[in-house]
Every structure is written in C-alpha cells, then in structure tokens.
Image (tube, rainbow, N blue to C red):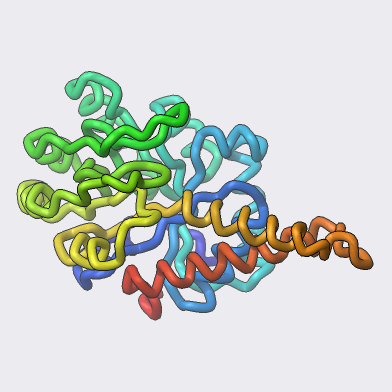
Length: 288
C-alpha cells in the first residue's frame, strides 16, 4: 500500500527542483478525486486535513479509516502521505495517535521560544514513529471574517533556528496568503525566499495558499526552494462551480439525476482536473 510519510518525497522534490502538491480534503469526494489524479499522473501526493475538516469528517481516526481503504480500493501505487494541516500541539498528537503519516505543527501564534520548544518535542516523537513533521514561523496571511490580510513575511533568523532542530518541512510566509488573493496583491517576495532557503541549509520549504498564484511565480518559487505547495481554495471553487452548473441546467430533475453520486460527480471531475493541472505545473508528474 502506498501510504507513506512525506519525508522522502519532499527531499526528492527539493533535490530535483519540483514541488509535491498538498491537496486539502473536504469530504469523501475529494479523497477519490485526488487519489485518481495522483495515480493518473504518477505523482507523489500529500492529502491535507485541517482541524475543522477532521471534526466534520468524524475525527482524525475516521479519516485514516477512510483514506487507507480508498488507497487499496482504487489500487493506488503512487506515494501518498496523509497530513494533519495547521494543527495545534494537541491536534498534532491526536493525528499521530490516529495513524497519520505526516503532521504540521502550527505554533506561529505562540511566542517564538515556545513554538521552538514544542517543535523540538514533536521532532523526537515524529522521528521515533517515522512521521514527517512540518512547522511554521510568523504566520501566514489570509481571509478571516471576510477581510483579507496581506501575507506576512517570516523572520529569517527564526527560520534558521527552527530549521536546525530536525524538522522535515518549514512553512515560512513570503507574502503568500490563504484563500482568495486580492486584486492588489503585490506578489511573492523572492529575495526573502532565497535567503530563507540558504539560511536553513535548504530544508524543504512549503508554500501555503498555492491557489491562484500565477504560474510564473510558482515556477520561480520552486526553483528557489519550495518543495511542497498547498492547494485548497481553487479546488473548492471548482467543485462548487461544477455542481452549480449541473443543477442550473436542470440535470438533477432528469431521471435519477438527483442521486448524490450523480449530482456530485461533476464536482469530483472538476477537482480531479484542477489537481492534475497543478501537478503538471509543479513538475511532479512522473516523479512517483
């Protein structure tokens, strides 16, 4: 079964100058779409699960119990990591106990020394269990209550110190944000990215908020050290648009078009296409 940690895939991505796609799950349909996309493109892939999604889908253990059988059922052979996204310390421990193969500790809202200390604790736990660990510094901008905050920028010295403790991936703000990007978004700070990559001895770096960033920016970010790119918003928008079109065309009123498997299938196909397009852009096609 192709259920692994993300460690080897992000190291390979860093060394060969491509990025592994991290695609956030939102329900069962997303699991199917992303697994099929990875298998068809022969791409390694990371399935991300936020804390809110874990609650919605019955907890971390329930999600492990869905993803692993799905991998077997669809005969998936490419490497797939199941990653707890933006977890606090307790959530990360819960995900580890549930059987996740990769976790992200987001201590960016804590004082840096506390973030560093908790990250050090998790390094030891994850290393013993063969689980990959991503950590974050400074915080990343995004949409909150309808207000878009401009993406923050990381402190290179904090990045250096966090990179020294043995984490597998580092998320550092370089002007990127979660959610939709505003029209006046100034873009990514490539000079900062280059400095962070150098000062962390080329620890695999993570770009959150990968939806809607122009392709030329993503390619340059990958060339400078980004090894994992998170995508969520764009997939959800594609899913919603496809299902909306199906209903607006009245297809749900024809025969058994109201069946949820039928009604949601355009959404599944839409997010599978988005994921495959991103894998092509990230350069991960054929890297499994």
